[in-house]
Amino acid sequence: MSTCKIAVIDGDGIGPEVCQSAVRVLREAVGSCKLDFELLPGGAGHYRKTGKVLPEETFTACAGSHAILHGAAGLPDVRYPDGTEAGNDLHLDLRFRLDLYANVRPIKLLPNVRSPLNGVTAGSIDYVIVRENTEGLYASRGGGIRLRGEVATDTLVITRKGTERVARFAFNLSRQRNGAPKDGKRRLTVCDKANILRSYSFFRSVCEEVWKENFQDIEIDYAYVDAITVHLIKNPQYYDVIVAENMFGDIISDLGAGTIGGLGIAPSSEIGDDHGLFQGSHGSAPDIAGLGIASPLATILSAKMMLEWLADRHGDGHLSDAANRIETAVNSVLQDRVLPRDLGGTSTCEEITVAVIRALNMPRATAA
Ligand code: ATP
Image (cartoon, rainbow, N blue to C red; front, side):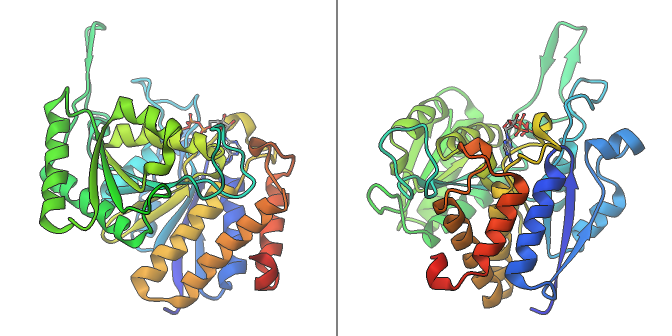
């Protein structure tokens, strides 16, 4: 394709620093003529100034772009009168309005990243959590009830359509992968709480129907959400792709990120049929904002996912080549022990960005 329009919302806290780092890496990997970046306002800081978290012009530009790159949004002291954080509405609004129903969170242990788990090495943890992104418990956001200061309720929503499409997405993803590190089997694990709530037993049964319909080449597996928190610690090699309801997926993907070095290295994408949004799994980390010590790796790896997605949609080999080069460059930087503080190193956001760009420009054989 000729030129991709990329909507960039850098947002709050560490969002701008990690987002600008990813844009620099993308420019270097792809060549600036192929990507046309448009920086757009939005987030908690913008809400404080204007009363709008996601300005309509930002939404329109996102809807008209080929892909959206996001830093992070949210500041703990910028809240609505009901006590919830305003900044979260940036991606929630984009998710619902652009129908980004699959939140894809790869959990992959990279070279020289020390996992808190014993006996795991690079590549031995390599699975993907597909979190349903538009319904589940979070569908009720803004619609819950607080009654007389005594009772509060939120409603968990599971639909056949929402479950079928995210299950299909997850099975298809498994088909594109090489199976679980433990045994090479392509496997979809349905994560739920089907033993307790009807909504989750419905989620499970719809996933099973989708499997029977079209995906019996892939093994289907089931895990209760409480049990999977133990399995992901004790036996992460077993997993290939996991599909989960929105809130469960949110929680277990942070747990998974913890096993591969933390939120600063865990990428994420939110995919719909027509749009894709890419950002690190972390939030705006206001505690370290502006100090220059945030890790840009999660956002750089999310940008790599963006190129893969664009390459796939538009059949563009140049973009998939650029995505591979970014992955190789990040691995090479980690191998050289240029590590951010959250991975036990001392390198700043700027130093890591420069190192990744340098690695991109190394002859391929040296960088690999
Ligand atoms: P949210 O609810 O918006 O996802 P959160 O409350 O989970 O956010 P984060 O903003 O993700 O919190 O950050 C949690 C902690 O992880 C931060 O305090 C910070 O120390 C660390 N952290 C997160 N992202 C990074 C990063 N990119 N580099 C270094 N440390 C990070």
